[in-house]
Image (cartoon, rainbow, N blue to C red; front, side):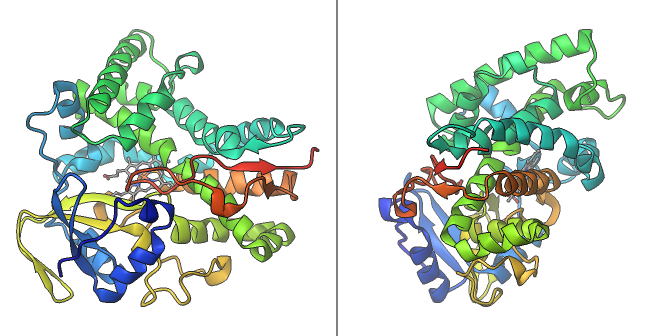
Length: 391
Ligand code: HEM
């Protein structure tokens, strides 16, 4: 089915759900043309999305010809953009650091950072919660985990923002990748000379089947960017939804044990990744009654599939007790989000501690006036002004 979808309009940016609901009603998969006139297929229903994510015949490789050299190196060696056997090998080298058990060990440190950041809210008449908590918490945690010295983190927010929002052809993105790669090369040299007890130190110390220099840079860039650009939106979107559903916020205040389920429901209703990264068909595949030929780009609208009423009853209602765990916000299959245990723990600690400390937190701006980050990839607020009563 060919659809001309206004995915790039201001209206869609302000609220994508009416357009996505219309697409879902008309079918599970749609032919779409991007702002740059590139045609692709957009999957909007849950069943077909799982089918695509679970199908190993779809490739993740991106064409890199003609791109600046540093960008080519980062893209062509990146875990998220590789197929087996390279993907399997790279994932095995890092997955040990992200198991739920290893991540649980970080709990006391994440709580400590959260409490310090929450101290900063006290006494201020109005605070942007993105700046005060949602951004710095995952950012500090991933920098610490990787072993980026605190005094050297100044340029990362700019680089990472450019990388996540830019398109591969943009000069800004190539420049951000070049600067970040250059910084990381220097950091690796220092860590080789003086080994450190952190994830980059461990990856540098692997014997035998180790990452080469380009793969190391690519992995560090991916973990840095994926490690905070998404979780910032999880925390921000959680506060936004709780403000829009005050009776659910009251339930969490009365029963903090519901916080983990509430975080899952935030992931379903307002997951940080609006779209899953793309895949390319290597043979014809049939989704519903549409057959997509080989060599075509396929994207999944995670925002849409998580509100599919064939999978979720009453999908536009925020209900932490639905407890059916079926959202696809972390993807599915072999590329399932490596950082899911970390993102979940950070989200649970941030929201649990925030509500315990400032139960009267409220928006300082009507929710209708909040602005969403531009672009199709991420779903998060640019700012989240709140007021709290000092404690
Ligand atoms: C992959 C979402 C947090 C690291 C993915 C994918 C999604 C996703 C949808 C799969 C993409 C695809 O199939 O094309 C999220 C969300 C997060 C989050 C919603 C926060 C709420 C994190 C964190 C880290 C991380 C904290 C790192 C510490 C990764 C990596 C991959 C990945 C390395 C690639 C896995 C692979 O290709 O095998 N993430 N992510 N993510 N994520 Fe996350």
